[in-house]
Each structure stands twice: as structure tokens, then as C-alpha cells.
Length: 329
Image (cartoon, rainbow, N blue to C red):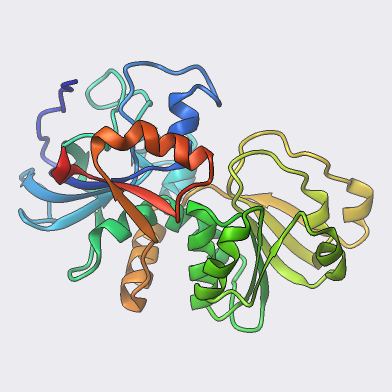
């Protein structure tokens, strides 16, 4: 279908979209698993594009530059959260890249499963030259979603970090935690992903269905990142935390299953959550990864393969992120 993008404003950047990642949240939104959908919907919030036009007040980009657009394209800009570079927590509501009321042009925002987009320059990320562009696309969602809690809880050398789930989010959590020097253990339901986790630098990768192995762990972990897209029994993983340590959910938005306050309160174990990050922190993860040669593991697909890719993501049949190659449109 054809969609109409807004006219270029003085602070806007127009981009030709080169690549767009497929996030599991796209599937949740399209299939109305979180909330009723507003159709027609164009998903996509892991966007890499080439700048084709800039407004007269734009200073961040020139024509020909490569930019990225993540999960949001606007916020109020003046609340305490926006002023602290936490636009994703805007008290007046951030504007999502798609399926969100468009405060500038009216209607509903439409995302990156398309050939072009217009975005205010503040919400476009600079992509360093010389990087693998397709592999950088997932950093704009999966990358920042896992980088932000690792930053906040100060993951570093000598810390023991667990990662639950080795999908699009989880594999980025592993790569980023390893790059920070942490001792990483992966918990997965997929036997075929254990070897991949070790190749990414994890010290150990275990099946969480292996109860003997799960019970062999003591309260050893300083931080656990839960990157599972659906609800799962959480208490077995809470039991692995040290006193005052934290499990951060960055995956499921469903009700947490099986949390036991009595077991957690004694050791002051913390259950927290995190969702993407602000624009400055998103730029930080892109620069962090570019400096270290870190990209997502991706499988390129054509636009006419999106529906099949959705089914494969749900079936855990991707290592580890599908990215749409818009040149094949």
C-alpha cells in the first residue's frame, strides 16, 4: 500500500530506508496480543536509512549521511524526564515510531516497513561510517533495551550476569555484557542455541528445563536480564540472585508469574523492569558497538517474506534477528 509522509519541516530529516529489523513487539502489535490494533498499521522501529533531504534548521545531518530511527520519534521535550534525556519516559507520552497518535501531522505514525520516513532530527541517531548497516539496525531497539539496564546496574568486570532467553534481545544482552567484562551465563529453552551463546562469549549456556542444573546454582548472580517475550515462571531465577541483586525484565509485558515475596524479601532481591532508553543513551550504545565491532546476528529477508518471518520468530527459528532489506522491495 502507499502511505503519505508529512512534508519536510525545518527540523526534519527525510530518509530512504535501507534496512528495518523485525522485533517481536511488531508481531505482538500486528496480532493484537497486547492491545486492540489501529489498522492500517506499518510496523518497524529498527530503521537504518540514508538522508535524502534536511530542513533548513537541521545541523546534525547532511544529505548522504546514514541515520537510524528507533522506537520513538517525538516527546514533549520539556518535562523532567525529557530534560534528563529519558524521552522514552516522557510524562506527557512519547510518540512511538508506529501505531501512535502523530502530534505533528495528525493521524497515526507509520513505521519502517516502508521505503522512506520523515523524522525530527533530534530523534535520528548518527550511524558511524564503515559499520555493517544491517547488523546495526537491531541496536536501535534490541541493543538499547539491553544496554540501558547493563549501564544502570553498572555491569562490569567480575560481575556475574545471567541472561534469560537467547533471541533478538537476549543475544544482544550477551554480547554487550561480555564486552563490559562480565561473567555471563545464558538460560535458554533451545538446545540449538547453547553453542551460539558460548561463541558470543558466555561462560555457560544451560537449558532451564534441566532442573538438576538449575538447582546446582546458588544465589550467585549480581544481575539477571530477562529477555523472554512472553510470561514465564520467574521465581526460579529470582532464587539465583545474591542479596540486594536485581532481575530486570526487558521482555514480557504480561503479568509476572509466580513471584514469591517471602522468598525474595529475606534477601532483598529486586525485581525491576526497563524499556528502551533515551536518545542520548541510544547514541551511546551505537557508538559503543561501532567502536568494538559489535553487531546483531541477522538474517536478511525480502519484504515479501515478512509474514513467514513472523511465524519463524514465534517458532524461535531465527538466529537472531530478521532484518528487511528494502533494496529488495
